[in-house]
Image 1 (cartoon, helix red, strand yellow):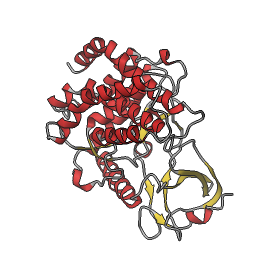
Image 2 (cartoon, helix red, strand yellow; image 1 turned 30 degrees about the vertical axis):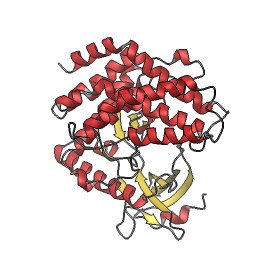
Image 3 (cartoon, one colour; image 1 turned 90 degrees about the horizontal axis):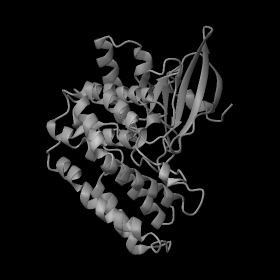
Length: 366
């Protein structure tokens, strides 16, 4: 049994610990599955240590988690939401009533209730998966209404801020510490062009033309749990990046990650293309439930959001390549460059299919 079992004694957990083992394939936090037995019943929990190299303000992460989980549970309970225990992420408080336990080294630990009979997938293969995951994210966004943006803290400053990401790219380009600038002139030129093109979304947010909302900020497919039997979208997880931002960030990141069912490091860049059936399913799952919430300005920028989030990701990969691969894990020297090229290829394919995408949006929003 893991040497971390003593951490669990600081939380309000009943029963006898039977098993504690490493869990999942996440790359950020250290995650373990704890199994308890109480009165002949098995109870399972997730134990996590927050990665403080990524989240420099773990108290903000846990503040947000506690505020949002409490708000959603009370709101959905009052509304009579079916299967609430599996649709709302729940944390277990410490014996002092806190959301996290801080050990003698300063590390932050938390315990979450395990959602039984659920699965997470890494790639969307069928339209119904895109629909169900998008609908779960829409329910999550609806649930956040009623919380003031001022109640939520920023966990990663300027996370999706294009201006800051572009400045980091320019610094990496000027320094060229890894000597990689030569040979990627085409990607560098594309980055300059795409920066100008994608500025309007950032400007619309900063100038108040689109509202600042509480949003998830990392809406990839494996941050939604699906029912293991029916495939229904159950619970939105991984709330560490939840903070003030734009609903367009979430829609754009879903568009980026749901609609091209190949890995971010697909060796054959020609396979990177947006699948219209997946795009339509995403739109039908996410947009109708939020029709009353979306402003006209947000509606006009939905397609631009896909470009924005895809470009930011490509720019981050290219920046890391120029810096010598200091942030993302790589398996070969051009790994980050391949990732960047895939993101840029997806942008180009979005352009090629823009008319069809616009028709789908118009039909869904009618």
